Length: 437
Image (tube, rainbow, N blue to C red; front, top):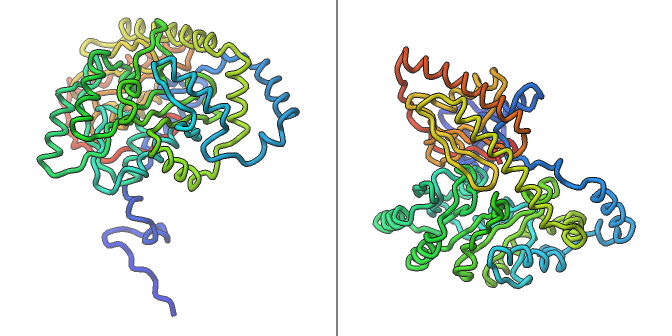
């Protein structure tokens, strides 16, 4: 007779597999707002939450014809297994894309991934043991926090200001980790048009930050999905271009072409690339060849630089609509960042308002946003929210902010009447979803 596995004490065992899960699943927590976004996706709700690209700007007719030609001409290759590293021609084209930001790279050091999220997951798997420290801006991308938690790494947030990561704060975080005997594995950073903060790392800080990391023997993981989406057309020198041997660079076509194809890449120092290929083989065997060939043909036959210019113009118009609406409608005591590119504005609300607690009431008022706590590993961010302007039309953005302002006014009235309720932050990031990406 087989004995039943012991139940974990202090829990109602509603899941018969509870005692079989690996210990690292303790760090995996479902998003508390995911159910709300099922409601938020209704057409009557203005969603300022999800970072979905505006694909209406793509030349869908010509793309449709080219995909048909691709299947007819090269279907036996496109629909077959491929290399875990990605097709060679696309890796060469990726090097051309990265050259726009000062990166000199060889295609042998590029690994194509199923979105840059896969690359982030693989890098974390390769470098982080349980208990290792990862430094990340505060706030930081929710998908990154989910990957770090899944591998039981501890995130230490480093302060940002309007010019991005603060070098002195980075020094202090590294010194504190050293005093505590903690091992910092890498700095994770989004230097351009940050998700969720919308700020850009000042050019004069970039070399200093790389020097600090080099002095302390800390790898840098540079996540750059928005770098070509600067509203004035300006591109910034990548961290990889400053110190190629100490940077693992993550790129993606999700924001500059089509997110649904899930084609991203990792550019890594040569020795790291070897391990990334092995990790890719164990994760997916190979990225979808068809999707890679679609992206490759698009880059070879379309004016992709002109298409990025169109995207920039569309997003700049939406950014302007968002900033104008915030200035017009939001109550006094609110503040926000002024992004020069990308998808997001980071809003801070008056003391006493909890954006996570307010979210259900906002959805009832037919507007949605991403509450700030999801972008911190330590539960902070209750006075912040991320507003995305990339997908709604300018008219919908204005209406969404108007509705949001009314909800905020009501919350502030409650605070004035009943006072502030102090809530202890709850540790642990939420797992990402397309609603918070």
